Image (tube, rainbow over all chains, first blue to last red):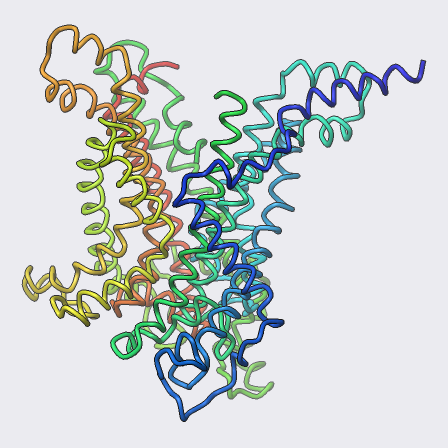
Length: 297
Length: 338
């Protein structure tokens, strides 16, 4: 008789997973042309940024006071900054730092937000009330303000700030995922899972999780874009990545006075920042449209 | 957000006529006061604990040149060695009488410093919000009339861009174009309204536009989709069947209803406004709350940071209440029983 529950598991789990598991790589090919261009450009720039240490670039910290604010030349394709450092190299290294920082924030948000949402939506009761309440409280303080306060108290540096940002973003993720869990909490495949004697753990991981995975990816894509913006923001304010290390935000810090002499100092890091944020937002939009089309709602 | 937007509407709804809706309104404000007070207490305690327990105020007061003995002396003099709850209750006691302590860096009262820069930030934020909402109302409604039309496509693309561009980047680009290259407007700085409205507007225009573009983009998205929805609804079909003219249908029937969600969006945008103002003030060297916050953090001015955190949280809570009340006032159907 022991084959029966496990066979049932497989059938019902396939049903449960069916909504979230058609692996067709339609993401980029289904997009309109401008979106395709933005996404491709972002992938190229992003890849160049992540691979920056292995690319034939100049040292982003090496100063050359002979060639200050040179403008584009053959040696410095985007020109140099006020200390003669290569702007192309600094922008790519800066994008690398910003991307890694955002990755930390998004990962922390996922690690906290998704399990909390699964537990709250599945178990309900006091634990849900407590989690709802705490997410309300966290969302009352604007993200940037909370980051600045934490920075004043702990002086954690950029990666500490990004862990904090992850904690701040988690409630937003929690809210969306929890409501997705609630949507399927009365569905027949969950009931049949329960009837066939699955453990709670198995139901949550194999029945519930596959159904909220798409929404989680959509939300995380938006949060990644937001985290890029926040990292650049706090580094721009001078409380994130500290000079001389480049990040897309710290590169923009202090360039206001130089904008008339060398606009590239603003346009290069600013443009890359906008491109990356745009790409993550568009990817989120695309994923959402795709999942809506699939479920017909 | 959902708990705070909905809960005040639910209890004690007017069972009878709409005219009796004063009582639930008072109740809503009462329940808002209770839950906000609790939230604010929690936030102020959490931030106090973080700043004063982990932040080690004695080192912040004594400065970077201080020896260990200096720090220890400050710790005892200022009472930082007392239990945290005692220090917090002290702070809370004076906060309730309108005293948020004295700044470490400039030896002035925190309330005074906030009071000085708050009007500047409020004038910046309000200008940005009003600009954004006025423009959004116009273009959002028009875009929603012809979904997928040329204007709509242009606007939707613009909105996607407007949301993706961080406002400090936008601010720098606008300065480069309008102040440096064209020389039409001053690059940075601030003039109070008392120096003359025209002067004030000249300095305020670029910062307000910078702050407003992101808000505008979000509002346009919401308005456009709610307008599309309203135009497909039954009452619009009825109005068309009655041979009402299209402008009347759009302005008097559809747009009025389509504008409702914008109230919620504006409320939700308060957090974005505050964040944006901090960055925009930095770009344009405007001496408002944002600059104060950045200076407080850089100087580890813990009483000032604590005061600012509470101020921002209270602002968000107040915005939530205003959204609930405005929504109930504009949309009578939310006033009655569920």
